[in-house]
Image 1: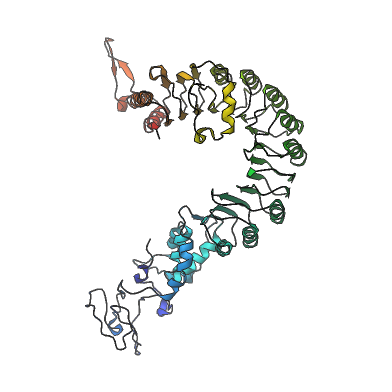
Image 2 (image 1 turned 30 degrees about the vertical axis):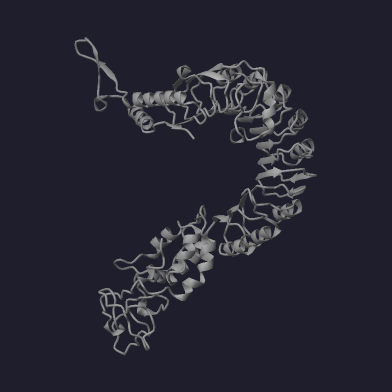
Length: 588
């Protein structure tokens, strides 16, 4: 929106008392009016000035000719007033690509006298409508709107004060004071999301702590070029000072060294890129979700066994646990099972190559009500999958077993047959062809794990048959050892076949009428064409599905148009819903 041309809109102010408006509805007065000192055509001072612009129908030459029943229109060539130029630097600093401002607070009470700021007559916008429009602008647009006129400036100030959630992308080489100046506009801020492309240090934390006294949710994500210099002591002080903080998510925590977190309000904690932590103490009795993502370096010296043991003693209400580390072992799993977390519902232990079927036995004996189990990157086999199916048939809805080299198609088929509540399954890089090159790091995400597939004892070219009534998402990315695939899943929505290079086009059968997207990057053209053909045929079949009725003489059956069918309304709605979502085959 271009705000520099907006002041020519005539606001209605009683008696013309608001001097910051460029043009006003000026009623006729008996006493003499003082004229304008600037030219009405070009805006330059009148003294010693000969205007070179011809008069236009929309521009008045003298203020004494102002009519009483119409507003004065100012030429668009007039330069912007000085107050707008003072905000130019801030406007450029807030021009983010992915910024967002949300005012989730309830409607602010507005006095009746304030309605005159925007006017209430024909062609005038009431302040309530202006509020709804401006509250949907990003910070860049909101700052620009505040430089239009006094009424807009007052409304934007109210919006900043009423904002409860703010999302900012901090550009490179920005000063810490920039974030502080923005946060000071929002004293009621409770949710903050920062995307930092510059380095993070204690000064940034101090600005956030000072400007947001009632902060409840904070998320800090960093770009690849940014460095997070926050130490463990600084993080501990920040968490201890924020008595209302319930959720903390932060990336790039490679310089923590060690930390002690004490908070009675914190319920969600996500820390990524952790490395060589000397101590980890959690004194958070209300913590329900924790995610600790360690670096992929082999020289990581973090004691995960002591960490897991401390979690069990100080965080008894944990429900979701995610730990990603190459140092995960069976001993760490035993320490977790000894913690006896009664409310645990989601368990994710990723990249632990020393996690075996014995670890699955320990997990199944201690936690029998898991809804999500992620053992990607482990060394479990089909026997471990059998134990999972025996313990969690009535609770498990999400099973992730990517990067598990000892799993075959038989184990995958057994899991889908024995877990009736399963809705999501990830088996990426489980059925691999040793003669084919491995996927890039974009697919597997870890170069270190590729060496574990050299000792696979799988038979190349396996077939996979899955029939499931509730499965919605299935991922088979990187399964280059898969030769045939037969799916009968009426609720399947998303299918990932990236890098399935050995799938034969004539041995692929997809009976999935609800499919919305099929990922086929890295597959050969014949397979992609076969998938597109099957998907389009399924869509056409569902689109043209009409009931058949036998003629009166019983000679033959004919197809009845949809408007003549007597089927229930719910079936018609289901048919229209399925037919209105064609499937997309996504290729590079």
